[in-house]
Length: 243
View 1 (cartoon, rainbow, N blue to C red):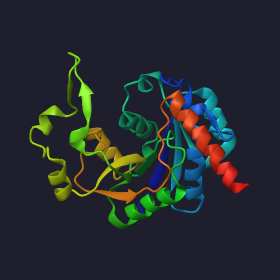
View 2: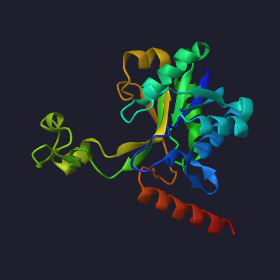
View 3: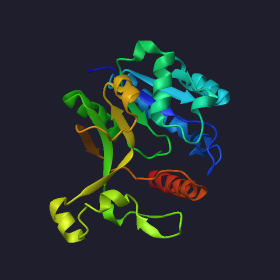
């Protein structure tokens, strides 16, 4: 298998839910939950290594304490830890700090998806081994693209991608006949030849050969206090099933 590095990026300065990546869910931080899955994959030889990328010194120390040499620490600077920094910039900074990994594929796993199953992560890695191209975890969605709306500067509702909507099939039944199922991503992106790709284009979707692994995990992206409360409820539900 080509070298694959599991990569978790978790900065300290989240705004809508302060310190969200370090919040405890079932007694573990969100970043710890995701790193543990990746370390498990590494120990079983499914991926080659694991990277913990954070600007928080305390979280760096915690990762070293928890995982030792099983995790490479990427010390993010303030310059690549802001609100509008793309994950691609973070990955490129890691490659610049650790050029020995520049030939690796990157399995970018967002720690705000704590219920992503390790079986899905393994399936993504094995699909990559077969196809040697980008592989993302996906879930079927019932919202067709022309239903996405935004409010413009004048307070009016418009299609989210207005220019492309002008050439997009507006009839839902016809659209579903042409494209019966649509999907959204679920926070796991395996990027082939990541260094070469990201240095030219950081848009993870600008690739005509992306394979998808259908994700049957409980889908929750924690971004607000309400999201976290829902995650706690689901965690309690899982605990009750084990009792």
